[in-house]
Image (cartoon, rainbow, N blue to C red; front, side, top):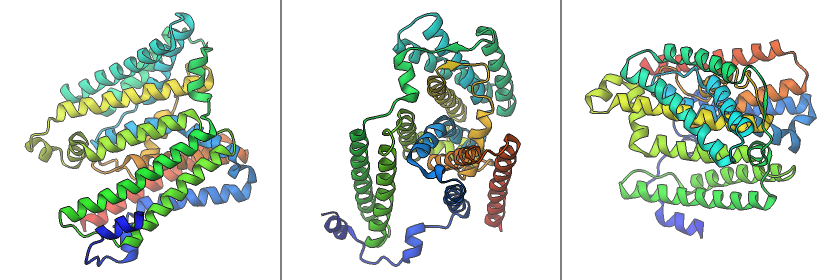
Length: 395
């Protein structure tokens, strides 16, 4: 049925080669990072067979949830030509607020969640206002925010660890969906992939663009569907899909749509690509800049809820260095620090690379300093690739 549908839409003259249709315009950095991820998994799988077990992979995906959520927001900030160094401290502070509302004040979970999200959004909004309307560089505003928020956290919690025992909050970071739910999610995802492929072909034909050969679309659908099925089977082989991963998937879908299919997203890329041209074309740069920091703060508070739930407590060290992991995930995943380029999907790949390195090196018992050396070296390599590609593009 799918084949018949796709055949009806096949372009009469599709001259693009199979290789070119499959991979499109070669993005050396993106394919390098995907290759590096595969290499990392194979290497750690050989060095320690525990790495590729269903239990460890389930833990790995759960571990990457906080970095992934932060990276989704950080992509928009970096694409617009800014940086947000405060997300780790916002995670710590809003996690502390959640613990205080739940443990000290005894409020219902829904009030705790709404209050935490509101706090994160307000913190992001204030920083965005300072950057957008007061013209203070984002580096300075968020660096100050990083210190201020950490200090406030230490003050309001009196530097104490606050436990969280509410069962609903505890479930958000530690529970698993039933195995049947994973199968339903996989079926829905594959149906959406097929629908998207058909819709894309129709749209390209409608406006007279060249369409890829039928075989290329079928190969892409098969490969992506196989990845979805493999993921669900591996997770079901342990306890099912972890709650935090569903949050990451939902947020990734929302922000992928926001960044690629909406006027707001196109304006963000335009601002990062050429700010003056964006201003002359009538884009409200101030409002858009404030919005991306608001979204970054909101996502930081979501990450805080997940982290606080996983740890079953709020500590003054929660979220420490999380901003560096988020920035590294974005850059490793292809986001340019110069602005104007980067994707949510790339940031998730970067987060998976970072978490895989952490997980694998921890399994092997490598000392902490080696972990910092390896992660730092990969970050520098990713930036070098970015700069190198841009120089080639200018020639």
